[in-house]
Length: 40
Image 1 (cartoon, rainbow, N blue to C red):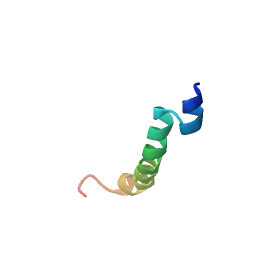
Image 2: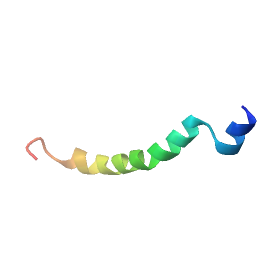
Image 3: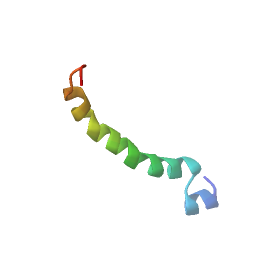
């Protein structure tokens, strides 16, 4: 890992920090969606 990656973080780290809150919201909706019937 280079000095700049240690200082600023890698592209993957930045993307994970950006995507994790979105994934958490999707996972929170899972129970609501599985409780619905096919007609809903």
